[in-house]
Image 1 (tube, one colour):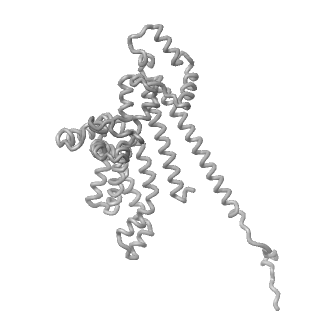
Image 2 (tube, helix red, strand yellow):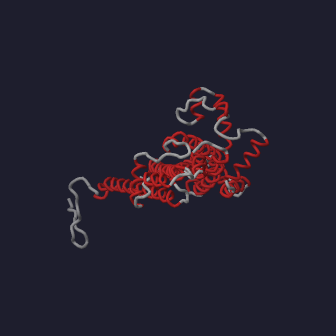
Image 3 (spheres, one colour):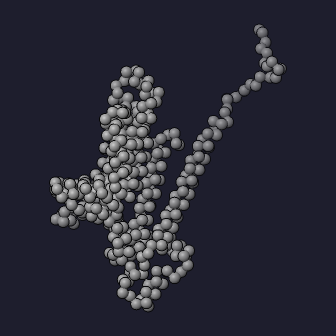
Length: 370
């Protein structure tokens, strides 16, 4: 039997293995993945802490830089110098600025946002009672934006350059150009003053106030849970107009982003291949193209909550909606800095929570980011 030459051309031996093949980099991949996950988690924690400290510093500075006098907001304008000085010291305003800031941070971390000069109640108590109204309005606006915006954007992408595409682009441009405040006033004038299709202000008519027990604070949900459909119908009639006006902003944004995402997918090779195989257009769009933009759309929809919360401040003022926006407006009008600082801090924290949640959802739903 002929022998096999186990040398290469330069007479060096050919490497052989006597055991199972190993691959160092493959063994290290799980460790690398864990390191990346830990690094990402630490980075997010640092970012959250830094953002929260920046938010606290912003609200603290705002309370010191605005022209309103926090002492007079409590005592009223007609106050003696002795009472003024005593309240001034009680508020800690005679301390150095950094001591005041540290004291403010400590109070916030313990849930003490001060007392409202308007209601005479702790700010936290006021926020817990009014914030569900803002969340309910914002959720209705988000639902409107999603139901209208996603199909509009996808249809515009599929029929690019056609009339529906031009309509979608005009809707998007108008949504970013027309002030929400003006749109709300026009909607009230048309649908309430002229047509009388909806309620004017508040969450329900005066007749229905206090009938439903506020279990969750969401009037639509609470009335449905109790089976009180008269209150549910009345509440729906009151929320549909401000929710739709507020939701128009998200319709504009979501439709524009949906169109952009879908156009990107429709140009991919797998879509061209699917069409070449004779698949129905509906199947290509919804089963293949839409499937690959769902995660992006979910992230965009979550991020619109922040913009809707910001717009709710103006909408609640127009429609006299008893939520966080109206509470903040009253605080500004009455120079109640505790109310202003508490409301701004709450909005900022909600923004932060939304961003963190959307980031976590994106990493869970998209394996490429893990």
